Structure formats: C-alpha cells, structure tokens
Amino acid sequence: MTTSVSSPADRAPGFVEFVALIALMMSIIALSIDNLLPAFVPIQQEFRLASANDAQYIIASYMAGFAVSQLFYGPLADAVGRRPAMILGMAIYLVGTVVAIAATSFEILLAARVVQGVGAAASRVLVATIVRDRYQGEEMARVMSFVMMVFIIGPVVAPGSGALILLVGSWRLIFVGMLLLALVIGAWFLLRMPETLRPENRVPLSLRTMWNGARTCVGNRTTLGYTIAGSLLLGSLMGYISSAQQIFETDVYALGGWFSLVFGVVAAVMGLAAFVNARIVRRVGLERLSWWGALAFMLTALVNVVVVLAWDGPPPLLLFAGLLGALNFIFSLAVPNFNALALRPMGHIAGLASSFVGTVTTALSALFGVIIGQLYDGTVLPLALGYLVLGAAGVGVVMWTRADNAGKTK
Image (cartoon, rainbow, N blue to C red; front, side, top):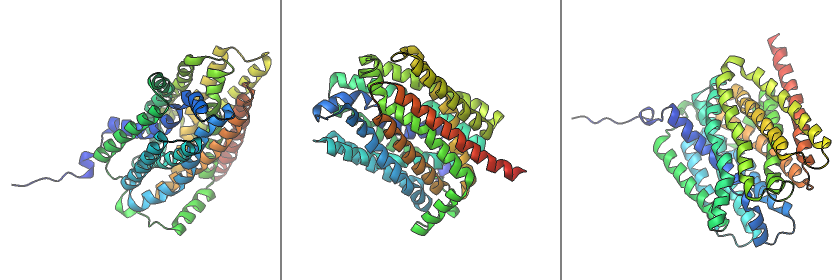
C-alpha cells in the first residue's frame, strides 16, 4: 500500500481562487482606511480633538507605518519565503487592531494605527511579489486588474459598513470587524497559498543585499520613473480620501448619511476601469496605455479645476462627483500598469523590488495626501488643485521615463 504526498502545486489555488485570495489580501489595506471615514466625528468627539482636520491623522499614522515597513518585507520574503513574511505581517496587524480596540487616548489610537500599517504592509508587498512570481509583463498587469476588480469592493462598501456599525455601537466595533477579517484572510492564506519563491531564488537577508537591491531599483530608469509617477497619482487619491468625509458628509455638501453612498459610487468606477484594463492591456500594451492614462488624468484634472473656479461656491454635487469618478476611472487605467512596468525589469529581485516600489509609492503618496488634506479650507479647491498639480507632474515623469526607453530602442 502506498500513500501519496501532495506537492505545493497540488494544493495551489486555481486562477479564480488565486485572484480572490490575493484581492482579499489587498482589501485589508483599503478597508483599514475607508471603514473609519464615517467614524471621524465620533472619534473627534470622544477624544475632544481641537480641529476636525486632526482626525485625518488616523489615516496618516496608518500610512506612515505602512510606508516605512514595506522596505523590509521584500528582502525578508526573498530570504525566508513569501509565506513566513505574510504570516508575520498578519500577526503584527492583529496586535495593532487589538490595541486600537482598547485605546484610551487619541495618541494610543494613532500608535495602534502605525502598528496596523506595519502589519498591513506585508499584504502590499507580498501581493505584488506573489503575482510577479507567477506572471510577467502584460499578463501580470491583466492579473492585477482582475485583482483590482475584486479589491475595489472594499472602498465601495467600507464607508457604508462603517456607518452601519456606528448605528449599533461605537467606532471600536469597526476595529473588531477588521480583526475578524484579518483572521479569515490569515486562515485562508495558510490553508491554500503555497510558497511561490523557488529555492534557487532565495537571497540571504543582509543590509548589503538591501542596499544593493535599492541601488539597482534607483539605477533603473524604468523602475524609478514609473514608481514616482505612480506615487504622484496615488497622492491625489490619498488627498481625496483624507478630505472626502469633510467635503461630502459634514461641510461642503453636508450629505450626512448619504456620504457612504456617494463615496461608494465614486469608488465603484475604479472596478469598471480595472475590468477595462484587463480586457485591453495586452492589445494596447503597457507603455501606451500608461502614457495615455497619465495624459487623460491630467486633462481631466484641469477640467475639474476650471469647473471649480467657474462656480460661485461648490459645483453641483453630481458634476463634482462625476469628475472625481472620471479621475478615479483613469487612475485605475494607469497606476496598476505603472506598477507592472516598474517591476518588469526586476524579476531577479522581485521581493526587494516590490518593497522598494511600495515604500517609495506609499511614502510619497501619503505625504502628498497629508498636504492636500491639511490644506482643506472648507472648499473643494485644494483637492481639485492637488489632482491637477500631481497629475501634471506625473505626465512629466512618464515623459522622462519614456524618452529613455525610446532612446534605447533606436
């Protein structure tokens, strides 16, 4: 009598399950932000914050931990494997979530959010790395687009679910929901995702390795250029997320409970864009689609600024929300492709390169988002100008990157 031993390939998830699991791993990043938007007011009231803008630090503190720690998960994943790195990240996230539930001051809550960000960063790095382990180029962009289609469900439903939780309990219950979701994701990952790092591709963990890898990324114009371009466009989105609650729920449009619906509809178009991207990226090509996406983003942002300046007061809700939806749609056509282009030359150090791209993208976008959010003055103009300035800078960076690639092909 013989017994068979299943190999990692035997228990590897199929394409649909793979996309669903990877998307859920990504979703915890956005849900940890968007779920809390309706809770800004009760948190401000409980901790007696001096300014409504101070509540934005709930996002900024999370993004700070999220940005810095990504630099370490990639080298760790290249040295010990993707599974151990992901398990460590989930454990750290769970600790931060428990501390947030029990927070007795705003400072403790912000510290817990930093820890949450440190843990969630594993998902950001490992998702891109695992996908890069299995796919390349246009196929990687196509898979990431499908991931984004599932992932976008989070921003669509998160504010609404947070608002519903607030109807039956305090903001702390929102963190309880995060805790339960993290436990589900961790269990699914442990049971179904095999190690995707080949033994021969393991790289010893050392500061020299990390330094050399970072130098390789910085020295590659394609990787550096598309990383910065993605950071600029993502910065405008972070500025929107930081000020959306004040613009739509409490101040400018004063929608109250309808805020979650508007935020969800604006976010939903990103899922549609991800579907479109998955259908056309192989036919159009990564470089062309990324270039036209960046250009369209800048031009739409310009229209948005003209509209805002033309009105005496805030533009009509449907017009302004429609323009934000258009910007989010174009964002989802460009930024996932930026990420694929940045990682394409880095297959030999996929984990470390994913860390580099993730750290730079998150740190810069969080900085831009904080600046836009803190410039909020009761109008929509700072947000509109943020989209335009960062969009124009993104176009300039893509032009610089494409000029180098064009020179190499001559």
